[in-house]
Image 1: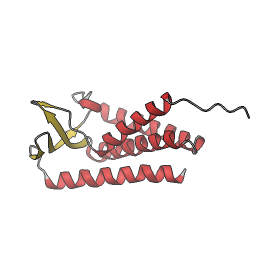
Image 2 (image 1 turned 180 degrees about the vertical axis):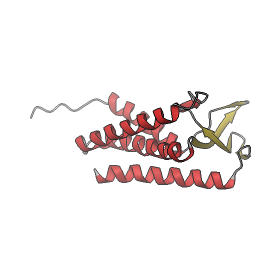
Image 3 (image 1 turned 90 degrees about the horizontal axis):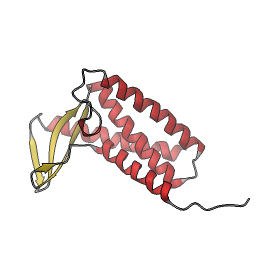
Image 4 (image 1 turned 30 degrees about the horizontal axis):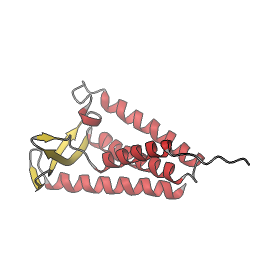
Length: 155
């Protein structure tokens, strides 16, 4: 289980370092154009994915922290129970690291720091961060793992 927790920790460290670097470098309205389809921005999201519930009256902070912490406990239990299922555990470790990275922001800042801004033809994908990327990749790997044919053993 140690290697799965190490992967989660690496996600948390990378997430927090990138958020710190962006927060120290950019002002709230700054936009740094990297390519014709990608910018660096500094955004604070008080909601969930795609700013869901960002405009709520404030209760969402504690709700999302509690939800992420409960999910983290469940993920650690699954990692402990199925440590030899490599793809499954890789996916869970990515989700765990992403969840913890965003929980740290919610606890310390009251909002999640987002900074990756992809856009095309005047349309912008909602800004996101390393933790969000890890959660998305982990979720995709969980789907892939769930769709893979299983070996049936007779022993």
